[in-house]
Amino acid sequence: MMKYFSIAFTSVMTSVMAILLFSNALAHHNSPESLEARVAAVGTLNIDGGSAGVGVATNDADSAAPETGETVYNTNCATCHAGGIAGAPILGEVDDWEERIEQGMDSLVEHAILGFTGSFGVMPPKGGNTALNDNAVTAAVQFMINQVE
Ligand code: HEC
Image (spheres, helix red, strand yellow):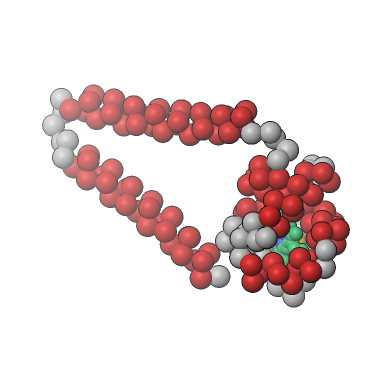
């Protein structure tokens, strides 16, 4: 839970800092002549940010095989498993996975596909994305196990 709060806190702080920086920039450009320059500058920033973001995402999707366990994990499982949201065992945390792994891969995969409720929380079927096929979920589980072995 602490991790969740610190992630949330960090993103709030990042937004606050972005707003402060932005209003600071505006305060230093109060003359009317600079209006155009200001708009242009902001527009350029937005366009750069937008295209860079889309470009990275598109390249990732194109270059990586869409069905790798890591891709499936990043898209469908990281929401909970990266930070331990809702009681999820955290990726790469040996303590969180040791006992679970002892039950065997088949059981882990079954729990990931069908969903299961343990003493920590609820693992939704296929992480909530029922459009995923079983192979994709299996690959994601294998990827998660690989991070602690
Ligand atoms: C909404 C949050 C959430 C998402 C999304 C999610 N999980 Fe989970 N997962 C959990 C929780 C919570 C647990 C632990 C439940 C418990 O033991 O009480 C868990 C447990 C697991 C386990 C251990 C099962 C066991 O038998 O101990 C595996 C494997 C797993 N998840 C795989 C996945 C995969 C693969 C995905 C993506 C396709 C995924 N999870 C997405 C919440 C989530």
